[in-house]
Image (tube, rainbow, N blue to C red):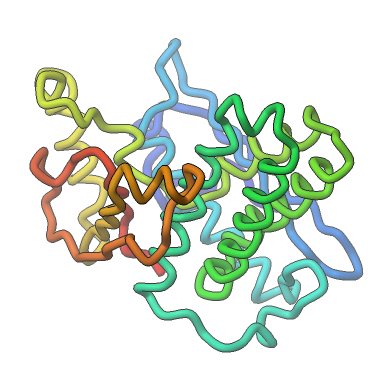
Length: 256
């Protein structure tokens, strides 16, 4: 079991200025680990990007530990048996597509149209299965998506939504979601946050950009669903600049 004393491997307690509460639940005999990480910032501070980056790194380390010491498994499938491997480009395409699907599931239509909700969740499960083949940490999000799909299939919207809330916390960060894409907002406090983000990411080789080049007409013709074939993956060198932050783009750290 992890204690917050171990957090000093990532960042000192003074730098973090927050308490960590980590819970690991094992589902024996499958040895599936469900990892929950709560961060309580001190003195009324906001839960911000540095905290999110810390949680993502911490979750990855704990999951790797579980995999090595407890034969970490996806529901019903040994990680070692997942085949064939997924390349880095496909991984980021599927990850970007999965995040887009979670956003579509937040729309009003997916709250009342259960046919669409189930369709979106089926696509989400399919994408996360591929993502989890390369990044075992995402197996936790996959498990949440499968449960959300089961609940939606039984018209249990409330339970389905609860699983989706948990799922969103277990996906790798899309940094564009936490940075303004409007040029008029990209100064002042946001300049400091962008500089801090670059500082926090020095240990990573580069950023990954995933751009959606689907036209409005193509999007409408596809019943307002994205086309994975219209997602363009490229490398972005450090440091990240405001020219890199734009609408219809996902930005990930290259970690998988």
